[in-house]
Image 1 (cartoon, rainbow, N blue to C red):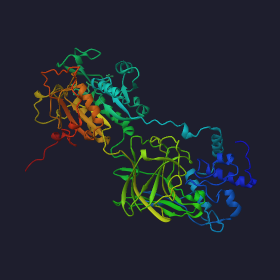
Image 2: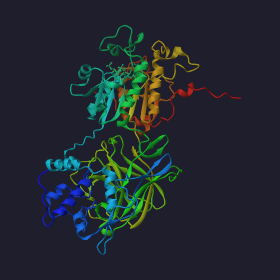
Image 3: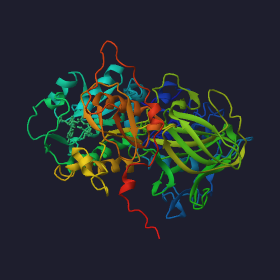
Length: 634
Ligand SMILES: NC(=O)c1ccc[n+]([C@@H]2O[C@H](COP(=O)([O-])OP(=O)(O)OC[C@H]3O[C@@H](n4cnc5c(N)ncnc54)[C@H](OP(=O)(O)O)[C@@H]3O)[C@@H](O)[C@H]2O)c1
């Protein structure tokens, strides 16, 4: 830091006091509404604390001004941070260093103004920023003075909706990639062999190299930006004789080869591989139930460390707190309560609770927004999300209205968040990036945005119980993980089945190291994962073109054949169809094995509307029903 200039019209001790406040404010992070050091040096005549609601406080509540006209005295109000542990309310006292018994300072008011609670101000800073650290302050000043651009402006937004195709060098996989590329949809492929992948799918293909049987080859960065997965990979089954390295059997029509497993076992690929793949992509593609950030649902419990952040930071006297009511939610479970008394005295008018910065940013890019379950009191509140660890930074904000006395579900789409800084819209702010959420804030304020007032603001006591905050996927939910499995997976163990009429894989399940048994176990992993899925079970795959009439069925009973091209199209259509979501189904064409299906390339049949087929599907049917013991009738 260079020379400290004494602002015009100020005495050196004012600057010293200002400096002390700076140290407090910027001890570890930067405090909203306190002096900005840049402002201090750039605008020497202005010491006013900036009101986070977009106004400069009229009485210039900067410490130097306050101290010119006000007297410091003791104040005996206690300050508690309330947290719940094991179903009880605990009062977590701020460390004795800032504890207020006997009290910290209160700044007595001039006539017409109310006393300002410096102790509470100090404790707010302490809660969010930790103990004063002059070194961090100095480092902050140097960083601010030396950086030409703000951290926000240098951040880049990457929100691509990439579809990951696994097994992309396989018969179905390469066709899926091809169709997606033709449609201009961003696609990434996971292959075991880069050279093979590029020669087959194009040198420029977005490609990552990994083997699903080895978790350490599935690097987290492979999945950044991935929103959906089409999984066509499979244990390799080949003829004992007669195939070539480029798998020429594909072009040999319908022939029966004596099959064997090539390479990794079905257990490794179909079961352990599926476990690994699900683990690798889960956070990126999201769960049907969403991600719980606060509250308790089933065996999930989200905890956030909230602290009050009121207009005391700019001289006001409003006061709020966060408490846990162990039985406050609708179902008798715990709820948090944001409550307090808001006052417009001293040009104030807002209260809020804000979480401490998350130790690791939350990546909610799989989701469409945040959902709050609140018990309304008729007021309008704000939800603010921050994507920077800096204290005094843009908050991505949305307002929501509540109905007095009613439990309500409030959904706030990420797309509705406005970049706001001290209640002013920041037109050139970087777009909201759901991958890097650092803190949440709930606010009750007199102020809306850009000088407008909150139409549902009433001075005085307020209370907002809330039992849940979760990231949600918007309805209608479509599959995020489309998996190509196989018809017959439930048949090897099915009682009373005539195996002679079954396809080779069913008959030879044992000889093929229980290939179908492990394919079924792999399917079960997806069904149980919580990821919105679609499981397609084709009958025997052929190299015929797409276009024949098809039959969709459920319960794992049909036999027949279907073209790989048709299956690839079904995979892509399933991604967009809510009717395909959380369904397991078999598919075949109406063409018998004895006939070869061809199309006139000059006059190909129109693409099907697969939704017509998806609509017929029912949830919960897998074919496993017939494996389950039937009730014995008396
Ligand atoms: N063939 C049939 O008649 C029939 C009938 C019903 C269902 N199905 C099923 O339909 C699906 C698609 O069949 P398909 O003929 O397209 O399959 P495929 O040609 O045999 O392709 C399998 C793909 O999986 C990849 N793979 C294998 N192990 C892997 C691993 N450990 N990590 C990453 N990738 C791996 C292979 O990569 P490499 O190129 O590196 O080997 C290949 O790209 C499969 O699940 C299959 O079982 C087939």
